[in-house]
Image (tube, rainbow, N blue to C red; front, top):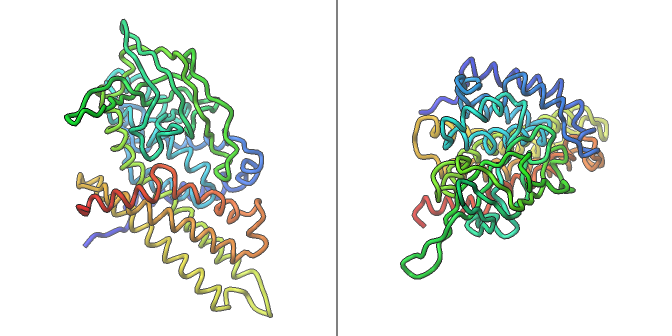
Length: 387
C-alpha cells in the first residue's frame, strides 16, 4: 500500500510556496492578466527562492531536489495564477530539463547554472502550424555544412520565448531523411540549441490569448539561423524521441498545475459559499451548492492522487507513461470542470475578470490541449493497454 503523506522536506516546500503564492503572486495576478504583462518581479522572487532549480543537481546550480518537489510548487502556484505556474513549468521541464537529460557536459556547464538560477529562461520550439500532436510533421530544417548548422522554419505557441530574460530556445528540425522498407520517407528530427541573440532568430508578436495572459507565448521565425555543430542536443535523429520522453515527465508537472487550479476553485467556492447569503442563509447551506462544491473537491482529490502516483513511479524508476497520461487528462479535466462549477457558484461575479475563478475559467481550457491534448492522452493510455 502506497503512503502519499508528504515528507517533512516536501511539506515545508509546499507550505512555503503556498504562502508565497497567496502573499506575493495573488495580489498582482489580476493586473498582469488585464494588461497582458509578464510578471518579472514575481519571477525574480521565484528565482531567489530557488524554484527554477528545484529538480537539478547542486553541481549545476540546482537545489538538489526532485521532480516531485517541482510538482508540489506548481500545484501551489496553480491555485492562484496559472500564468505564473506555467512560466515555472515550461522554464524547468521544457526549457532546462532537455539539457539536463540529453546535453553534453559542456552544454550543461554553459546553460544549466543560468537556467537553474531563474535569471534566464529557455523555451522549447517543437510545435508548428502543421506539427502539433503530429510532431512528425515538422517542416523546419537544419543543414550541417563546414561545422555549422543553418536552420530555417517557423514555430508556433512557444512559451517563454520572447521575454527580456529569454536566452535560449531548443528547436526541433529535420536534419535528414531516409527510406523505409515500404519506400516511404522517414524524417530524421534532431534538436538544436539556439541562443535568442542569434542572427535570423525572431520572436514575433505575442499571441492575444483567451487565457494565460501573463504567460509569454510567441510564434518564432528562424531565417538562415546559424549555430555551431556542437549545439546539437543529444544524438542526431533522436530529437523527437527525446522530446517525447520530456513530455512524459512534463505531463506530471502539468497535472500538478491543473490540480492546483482545481483546488483553487474549490477553496474560493467554499469561502464564497460561507459568505454569500440568499433567502436568509449562506448559500453553502443550500444542498445544490454544497453538493456541487463537494463534487469539485472529489475531482481535485482524484487529480492529486493521480499525479502523486505518476511521480512516485517515475522517481522509483518504474514505467510511468500511462500513469502520467492519466494524471494529465484527469487533472486537466478536473481544472476545467471545477472552473465551470466555481463560476456558477459565484454567479455574476464569476463572470468578472478580476475574480480568480473567472481567470481559472479562461485559463483552464488550455490544460486539455497543451503538452498533449486529451485525445493524445487517451491514445497513449490505449496503446499501453495493447489496443
